[in-house]
Image 1 (cartoon, rainbow, N blue to C red):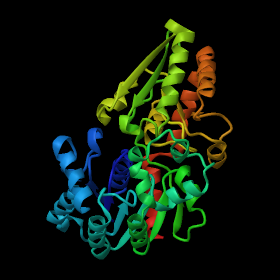
Image 2: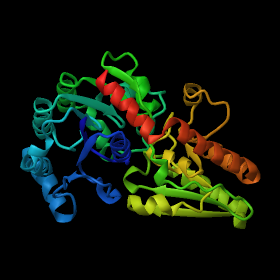
Image 3: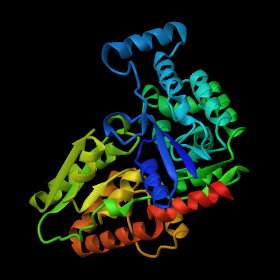
Length: 377
């Protein structure tokens, strides 16, 4: 089978590619390298006019004329190499705005993919029209939209989510929806909003290539090391403000018994190794399930503060914790962190269960098989 994976912002498609190749399929990835993260892309697209003076000029042109020059340059790059994006058995879009273009140019790119390939599927692995609509209509649903509704995130910093509420992105959603064979959710946060959707094909967990992630059993004879990796653009969206406040309290409470490691906007290759010596990793506060960073840390045997709600526990039939459910509450986070620091044997046990869980439920080859089954059935 010849497969084109469109978009990459977490290493999901890279791991899926590796699994599909192990099964004998021919796989390529096209998309942006997502800024500082710098993921591997077979056909990379550079986002033009996205820094410094040129970005200000781009914004000014857009305000005066409505013309998005970055989208135009993205379309030009795609058009230049469009012969490479033809004749695939399966194309999978990572979300409804895989090329980060405005409606006009995104639609033109997608039209080529729809017309020149056999099947196209949509992956719900981030915010899209249906997910955002559901979250706003259900404000008690645990998501980053709660932080926005509480005024913790300004509208200007939330445009990558709010854009899905606009008329143009509703039109883009309808265009995509009318041309795809089906929608797949990558975790439970995207699963629930799709349950009544006739094109929903089910939840397929994120693939993790554990052969590339070393597991080292935790030792707690000395300091307990806590790691907090911050992506500044998503600071409030991940609940980093709650984590930082909790860490300040923990530092005062435990002093020399703990060590805090914090990073800011580091490339993926650096990030994945920056928490090797940590026991505990702080990931996010607004999820039911784990995102990709959390899963990779769990594969290393870390105790991860992330989404691990009861719905997640029930779905995977878990009776013991494989991660710590994080919520946007400083006192709660301090309480959970304190318990682990005071009970280091539990850190070791949870870390071991985390790795076993990833091997059982997220193995990249098993997940690749589930994708091929879904695409071909």
